[in-house]
Length: 159
Image (cartoon, rainbow, N blue to C red; front, side, top):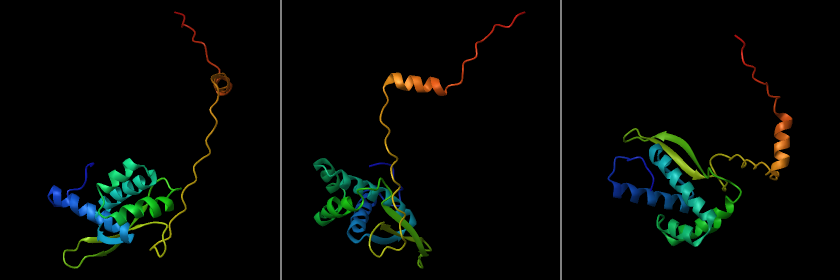
């Protein structure tokens, strides 16, 4: 696992909490938590959706090692993988909501985008530019010479 915020918890508690919160986010598609936790969940949830899109057995085992529940894994590899097949990243949205009464912690909703009854409409995924056919070396060299400015010859200064 990569470097994460410490969130004022021991390592085992922190990882367990993040695993549970990512699993609940996948299951319910929107949860409310503090802004710091939501920013960490966003990274991990995007990684899980990426594994779901990959769809291999290795990806399924890596996802199963992190999220909790067979229904969550099934949803990752079927529903979410299909929903985000054309999107290259940015599967979650973070919306700040309120200040919590007890400790004045800033709260936020974290939700998956492109779903029914979402809090804000998502932008369409950016289309990928068309790939250019690779040129053979002779044509490429001729094109580079065509657009390159003429070289100036260095003349030695006379003394």
